[in-house]
Length: 136
Image (cartoon, rainbow, N blue to C red; front, side, top):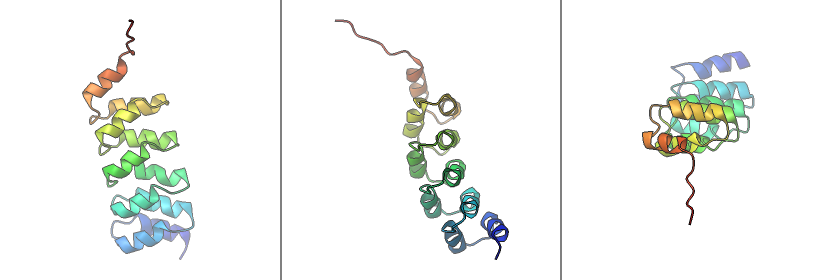
């Protein structure tokens, strides 16, 4: 089977969870990325792909609507800015992870977290305030 066929299979809505699990272990990152992109990929497979050594495979896990909140919370700590940004955009990202992303070192990540309708309002407001200093 050619890699192109395997990529198409990974993107198919009728691909079985067992087959997606096999494709998630593929040696070519493009096949693994296709599995991560698929909205019918089961949560346990997305959890596996969230730890892929290649960031381009982790990126669609961050934006996949099927990714469980606890995996999104982990991705909020990813070294790759694009993954943190897409995690901040995901409406299923937990509030505590969004609060963390409001303080990210990257402006695009902070903006994505601010624009997520699930970001706690209090946290966004508090983060926008300059720190106060007590003088004794």
